[in-house]
Image 1 (cartoon, one colour):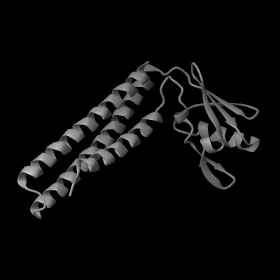
Image 2 (cartoon, rainbow, N blue to C red; image 1 turned 180 degrees about the vertical axis):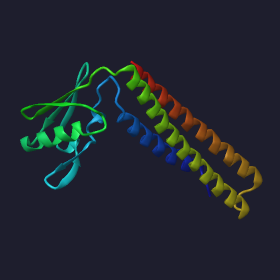
Image 3 (cartoon, rainbow, N blue to C red; image 1 turned 45 degrees about the vertical axis):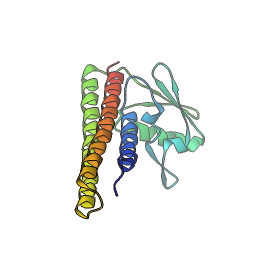
Image 4 (tube, rainbow, N blue to C red; image 1 turned 60 degrees about the vertical axis):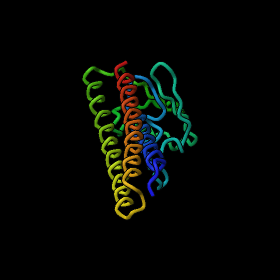
Length: 182
């Protein structure tokens, strides 16, 4: 039988995916999540930067990467520069510094559109989740496992959870847009 706990658990997974996706979108404020998952080809293996060094932030707009192996420094710098972030890496010994320039108004608008697109994709995923669970409820009703009253109560509970999740998605979107426009 379907429980509202199912939708809470699966909805939380969608929210976590959204948070991760949004954390990788550039804003004027430096964040380690911006570069730490960029993949680097190193000694025949592909691994994220966070496995090759320590990623930190230096206010107001600088990301600092302390690389553990000197040989990895040029490879990491090249991976950062060839990423879609359009950033330049400054090498100094075992350290890579990335200065985040101020975003132009045009770039801010592009980022806001991109963030809205990501959010909409996750909303669609949430709607599919709701439809899938509602189908399970209907199947339970058809098989006689739940009464009609129980079916309506379950669907009502599912919709309440979906509304909560959608509210959280909207909050995340609003916060990210505010961050981009700072």
